[in-house]
Length: 339
Image (tube, rainbow, N blue to C red):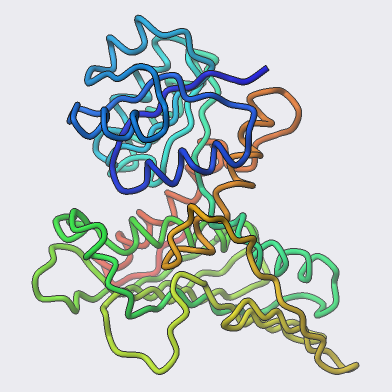
């Protein structure tokens, strides 16, 4: 039987999230909510959603829901998560969970005390090339990884699609860093130390658009995570694909443009492509990201149905968010942060 849910937020991400749910099957969006009712009505009409709301209290009072999917802006996540917890309705929420760490911790604790499942839609680790990379690492082919580079550097004009990002005091670490630091944890384990430097290249934005983060992870691996959305002209740009180069004591692994995965050992280089599936509804500019939404939601749906454990619970994602805020602390102080 399909699970009934309400989508909260009708902005840039919402139509892709709805399309991914439809692609997956097993759910039915029963209601749409946005404080801008006209936006909610337009999206509801487009996707055949029966009910539209502009007030969360009214939504949760009137609708019988199996979960809510919060895709509103970051500053509203806390309100809707607490509201859902009060009504004992499970929550899936977009990243970043909250704009400040204490708020995120309170959200997690509120849902824990209420016995309400709380998941974060952290889809980057579900990208096909990243799952392929994880498989290659776990095979042991390159031995113990001692150094890794994660590159999320692009000239893509992301601010044109999401202009609200220019108004954020915290930009690339809170936006892209949330994804890539979670991927680093997924691949290498927990961080022990973190050091970060940031820079603002765009003259007309409030936050940082460049960040360099170095971590010691899992007791073994030095991880350098490079982030930039400075719109700097580049010879090679494969946005939004993330690139990797990992060195181990018996070889190396590279995730290169066009989804090439290369494992090099004493036997030579073994290469294969790990392209994402193609969906007609996905924006070509965000292809690999949008494709990863389907397995991510599939995992969370399975958890809601009791068929599997969720990878990206809010409690787990809190560990990734702590790395984001530790990066900001390091950038402000100029000091290494021990975790």
